[in-house]
Image (cartoon, rainbow, N blue to C red; front, top):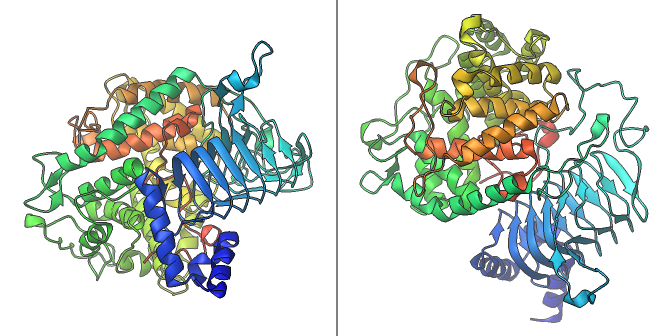
Length: 621
């Protein structure tokens, strides 16, 4: 290579953020070969990652989310897991057990040392064992140059660590810290102290946040022996989850990963070229989507039955171009035909409504997207939307009402991603704003929910399950705080004590998920009854881990209300849902990072889309 070419190679080593837009074909080929070599050793690299050939990467475990990079002359060893949009800049050192959330920036010459040497006086240091509690860094964290972070430290979401700091203790979310040893200077959100006291937004106000400013904060403690700082407006508290449950999670995750290919192959039919939920069942759209999600969670790759492009095209052709919905498969596995629309353009079809969620998420995981906007959403005016919201069965079937909101809001999100800047992207003018306005004025401040329990004898099943579906597609997906989080926790915990749904042997995936997610979502804003939440999650987590069937996955569980759900036999739906549930429960307990996976599809913890969370240049093909 001539001198000019060598200079260009050196530039991308030091400035990897310019690789995507300015790399030559030779540089791209070299980077592809670099990533092939890393993945051959077990590394998991998301789309648009960059790992400099000049970086010393000798990790036992390496996982990088989309749009993350390791610059030249960085030194990376041990077990390193990073979310999306993370950067390890030149000459940085990341060693030992280190877990990074999304949007973590690590400055040049900084060291994250997730291990330590023993130094008892009776033996020379070089003869003493290494120990590792691990380092956990939350979402949206900036660590400046020449910083040292020591083993066992947790840095909460949204922190900023000044250049030259030596971090020896946990930092609560939103802390700006500096010095040796690092000390909190102030809260990033305002002029008050690092715990944010004096702010007007309390944890139980609709706009208040006291743990993290996003529903999708980082996993809590990577190691059960490592401490966890849960702070924000309420200050920091330390807790140490039990080591035994953390070890059980790690063993379960390894077992599931080892068997994932067999679980998927069991539900694939070579004759039809389709997935069924379980052997002998009819092929369905959802089964294909569940297969994609399971493979992404456990294998970091599409199911081996087809390439990613083939999977995506198989799903894209199922979308009805007129409505934008995806009906269930027709006999023979052909694309289905939607029913006739109502006056406002909506099509009453429960399967097609859920496919807005499942197909859209599967395509995103495959690096693709819908071929058409969800026109049934995009063409609905604000007045039509409000009329439909008013007519939903909030008093008798809050679950169905919440599911409709989930579908409509998810369709609006998908349209935003597909057609940003167009009038039809998110519904007729003002429709998305009308949705959140309607929800904000209809929420019950006594329960934190929408709708009512139809009768005391029926409990809160409809109310809480409807809340999960509604908030998943709206508040969680658009990164907005839920109203009245303390009341939500009260209502959900009262429901979680109902033995009809949560006694051992009576739990199904739907009912447990619909409690775990609301507790997790509200818990991003409040620590109300935190010990009770953690205790319930720990009990359900221990029960969930026992439900895995070797080489078959999870069964959904006993039939839900009205006989819903695929039943107890292991299948793709049960496996996909319980894998997400296990993560949520483990995160509530504080051990989610022992799993080594994080949901990225329908049940992902991160916000999906709003102008505040859009990432320039990150549009799928």
